[in-house]
Amino acid sequence: MAKVNENYQKLPGSYLFSEIARRTAEYTEKNPEAKMIKMGIGDVTRPLAPAVIEAMHAAVDDMSKEETFKGYGPEQGYDFLRNAIAENDFRAHGVQIDDDEIFVSDGAKSDTGNIGDILSVDNKVAVCDPVYPVYVDTNAMAGRAGDYDEETQGWTNIHYMPTTAENGFSPAIPDEKVDVIYLCSPNNPTGTVLNNEQLKAWVDYANANDAIIMFDAAYERFISEPNVPHSIYEIEGAKTCAIEFRSFSKTAGFTGARCGYTVVPKSLVRDGQSLHDMWNRRQTTKFNGASYIIERGAAAIYTEEGKKQIEETLDYYRNNAKVIKDGLESAGLEVYGAVNSPYVWCKTPNGMGSWEFFGLLLEKANVITTPGAGFGPSGEGYIRLTAFGNAADTVEGVERIKKLIATL
Ligand code: PLP
Image (cartoon, rainbow, N blue to C red; front, side, top):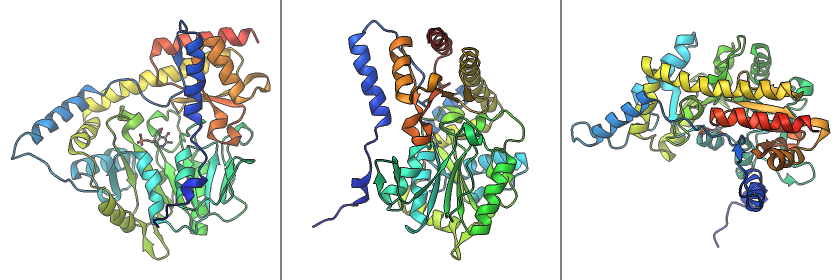
């Protein structure tokens, strides 16, 4: 009899976004006239930059002619894109990353999920709480998480690091030995960042304990403050302990186009094995490369006009984030994130639960948000709002929330 991966049976249902959709549908069925404003989902809404579209069109034309047609591409990504990434995202900022340390993919979700393929099942994993659920669920699927405990709403073999206002959203170095540490900065969902000193402490820990840091920088482009590292490789010692994930999704609106990349330094060695060579082996075996057309589109964001155009779109979202933050603060709410992130992490008023405040905003302001508790127990007492919506809707949504808060 074929046996299935029993770890899948242990996974709790992916409850958060389906529950939000269910509650929203229940409300709108009863109130069909309500004009709902979506401030919950982490997906972009602005179209791709003209330079990207142009490059993709040209790539389609390449596919139409025998001389320029492309079949299977390199599994690691085309040289033109690996070079543009290494040059612009790293070397231009004084961070020495070689072209062949860049692995292009169809996005950071795949890479953060797949990276566990090259790790032993025996590793102890540490994650922030609240957390982007992919890190936890993929480790659970691999059998690295132990069992799910309904009471604590966590996995028995995962080390959870509360990341809350109380500790300045900087997770404490574990008191037990951990082997794999997932860090996300700017963070989803809290919108907060780790500074140089905080990241240096993690790099030192990882090097001292032969651990590996999985550094997710999917929201790097939203960093606006100085002293906030854009890459973990800005920190001395990181190239011997860290893998970095990046995505074009929020940088350039590629959530639907799909493209991202992972940096695995050649100097990262554990158990006598090169993680770079292992990831290369994994990718060449299980992945046939991102699409040529999409990679051409991604490379266009590094051209002069591409750079300018994606900045305009990023500014649009950055402005939304500021509108949300300023508006909620003026209503007297405690607000985090937004400055270096498209996410606004807002403390619920009067000690309300996440789902209770979500329900209130849904029904009394017709604004859809995301309850913080859905990202982990330490997200209780917060909601997440996103800056990826239409600007006029964002202004309107914030006004409605302000009016509602004034009545509490
Ligand atoms: N990492 C984080 C922290 C995210 O929030 C997301 C998307 O929401 C991703 C990775 C996935 O990015 P991609 O669209 O490149 O798969």
